Figure (cartoon, rainbow, N blue to C red):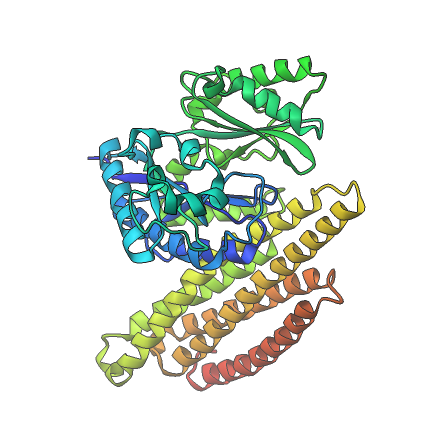
Amino acid sequence: MAKKLVECIPNFSEGRNPEIIQKITQAILSINNIRILDKHSDRDHNRTVITFIGEPKDVQEAAFQAIRMAGKLIDLNQHKGSHPRIGATDVVPFVPISGISINECVELSRNLAERVGRELQIPVYLYEESAVIPDRKNLEKIRKGEYEILKNEIISNPDRIPDFGPSILSSAGATVIGTRYPLIAFNVYLNTNNMVMAKSIAGKIRESSGGLRFVKALGMMVGGLAQVSMNLTNFHETSIFKVMTSINSLAEELGVGIHHSELVGLIPREALIESSIEQLKLMGFDNNQILENQLEDLTLDRKTSDFLFLDALASEKPTPGGGSAAAYSGAMAASLVSMVTRLTIGKKKYVQIEAQMQEILLQSESLRKELIELVREDAEAFEYVMNAFKLPRDNNQLEEIRSKAIDDATLYAAKIPFEVATASLKTLALAEKIASMGNINAISDAGSAGALAITAIKCAAYNIRINLSFLEKNETGIALAIKLEDIEERTKQIAEQLTNTLKERGGI
């Protein structure tokens, strides 16, 4: 029997603050056996789409924790963006991947909706296959008027009473939860800043206006260009190539062309069969955006996954880079600490320190998990910087927005390796402890853990300082540099203690 796998693609109303996005991501990954397949943030939409996969109960819990965290951190009263939304966690779709039926996913989604309404007091509407009210099957109808209109109508209009939760909106807004079949989120950018043209094309191609079947489309401005933003709900019936061809023809009629296109999230391999990346003018496309490539990776053993990271590190791409390598080194250090504690626990010779070893093991495993996640977050931090540099600068106002976005992204790119250094310092301290009292037969492993932690701190420091060099007058950056010096001084002290301990116990 195939393993039951469910894909979840929650959309969060935040695409500009990487620290908020990081906390939501961490909430998802706090649940064991969850794998994030893709994460896409857009400043103009002010929206982030995270795609993750796992077994049903794990996916349901991860989605709940993400909704809870987003509700705490995102205030819809302050939110501005070009994409329609009614909630901090705007929509949570479940998609059956293997070993599970659409009906089982419907039950999963309804159970989550009931819990969100009851425990978080967030109004929830069910949509697509999970809808219990036929008129709510369509997401656009639920979103009508967005948060600002819903805030009043949820109280006064019986047609807008939620399926679960209170009939009143807090700053977290409402959430739409449901089950659907796989769709393709596909955006096409025109080589013009005339949004009227994008809206005209969107109106002609979307199914609800008599256009192409299984196509939902909106026209908006993104990054200084007019964008046709689409969801393709059945690529078997209406292919991505057919959509692209239609948009190209309509654009030519208006005297404009296609600048480029992009995918948001993943795409089934079959959907690309009749098209090439060049034909679709896809910008920034990565083979990891092909769903089947991600699913194949899920079957790889741990050793093979490690080799894939090293292959990526050796490639011509700028990410992953030194910051990710620092986190990886720190994770290896924490892993060795865990190994030595496990080789000590249960041995009669060390029974008196078993409780201490158990506590160290809990700490090292927590640090290992944190550092593994920081491997990915460091690479994403660089992407935020690159995206900020791509923002338009056609006038003083846009230049000011771009400059602030670059500074914010650069500071975030320094904060991630700082977290690596902080976690690695804690790991180094644990390595010194296990070297002094752990299983003598594993003392060289304790020493190796310390050496790897020291390396992680050094590598992280390089990456912190290179980013801070672009933020000379930034007060937060200056404070970060001072804290880094404290970490480096403490590293020297513990490293010296570790060397002495190893000498005393015959480790070197």
